[in-house]
Length: 234
Length: 190
Image 1 (cartoon, helix red, strand yellow):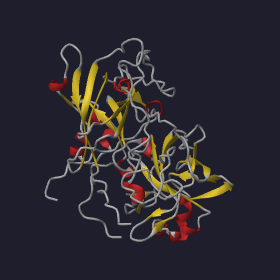
Image 2 (cartoon, helix red, strand yellow):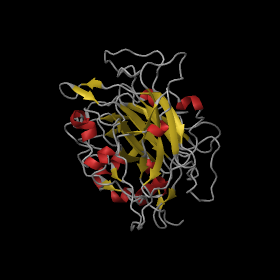
Image 3 (cartoon, helix red, strand yellow):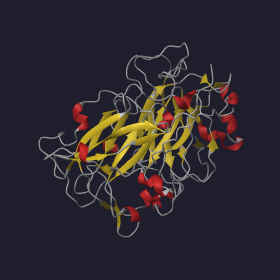
Image 4 (cartoon, chains in turn red, blue):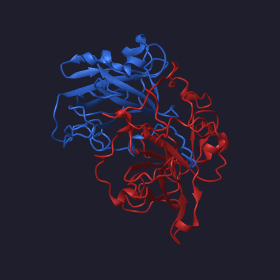
């Protein structure tokens, strides 16, 4: 069997270290031993592209999953999943989840004393189209406190999980909203060394996808690793 | 390549509240229909640098079927795929840090050059306190080919055992994942 075409490696500065002490819970969860450099083999350049089950239109509208309308500011989030070479990533599963407008997750372990919304769960699934486009409707999540340090608050964010064409394209990230005053105080956002790269996680307000008298539009493109032009030596 | 590359989107932690947001058909049960090969359970405990169980991480595995074929277009081997097995599983650890997959034992798969890789599960760990996921592998102790596996060969002798699951019953393999400290699992830079 011919050797596989590898993907690029981690972009230095754009990806976080495992250990970042301002984010306290990294302290006991980051490996201390050196990582072993792995060449990409068939095991890494393949990945789950089939078997994701049925993804329904309702999975892309988080405001319609219950009997009534959730409270909060209705938004439409859309964008493209691309690789570093600018090629679209079609037919890939995008999973999203978030807290409600008050900053409360439906999750049983979330004890933040803000109200749950009986009309909002906060989870969605979308498959990108042939051009890598995705789109979903939701409400704008709230900021919420956490116990990392005194008076710690997470900037409003939506969690994103992407599969891409191979298992090493797997990416979990968070989408933020423009101009959030909490960026400067958030060790999860600040954990990305390169300031320019951090900004790739911030969506932009978009009038073109804003629907009159209905919902504000935000655009967020996601860039996964691309094929490496220079194959690695064995 | 002359064209300027786009910058990678940074990784962020999956956080503590992912469970409701990442439902997956089958979840930790990879067998969704007819499948060839030996059915096995792969289980273990995840612990942190304080030796405490980690109750809020998510493990994902990707593997070949029993014939050593990945259900993916880039696996061009002339081998059968299974109707009821795609090779992907997801499992959140429980309150005791335990994960458990129901799957089939994978076959050997091609490696670099003319090499063959011993049966293994490609394994990601996601969690709170992890700004990016960690990549490891799970091998099986009863596979003679481990001795010739090109990836295990990259791992220092004294740490290789952290990647090899013990057979604790005829159909059950166990391997703990140690995120940090004594017996720390080998993680890969990929």
